[in-house]
Length: 138
Image (cartoon, rainbow, N blue to C red; front, side, top):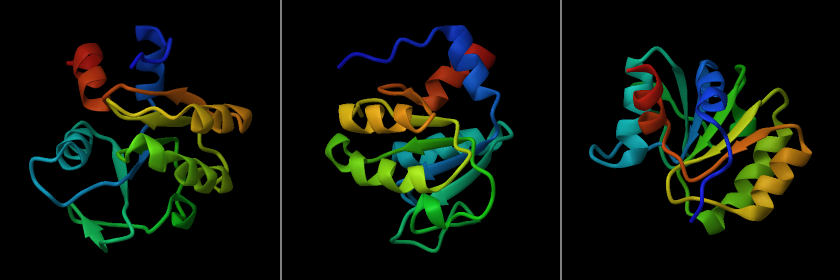
C-alpha cells in the first residue's frame, strides 16, 4: 500500500493543528488506537475520543460519532479497517470545519479519500501520527 504524496513540510503543517478526533480510540493498553492518542495527548494535542462502545477513553468523554462532537475539530484520525471507512467519512462530512481526514498506517479507502477531498479536506493515509510527529518534532 502506498502513502499519500504529502511532503515533510505538509505533514509538519498538518501536525501544527491541535484538535484531533480519534475514531476507534481504544481503552486497551498496547493497541495503537490507545498508545497513539496517548502520545498525542502527552505532546499537547486536544484528543477527542470517538467510539460508540465506550463512554470514556483515557479519562476523556467519548462520542459515538464525529458529528456528535460539539467542540472544534481540525483533524479526524481514523483507526478502522479500510473497508469500514466510507460511513466514517460520510459522518465526518456532516461536521463543518474539519481540515484533515487522516487514515492511520495500513488504512486506505479510495472512495473516502475522494469524498473528503470533494468536501474540502486534506487527506493523509497509510501514515501514523505518532511516527510522523516523532520524525518531525522530537
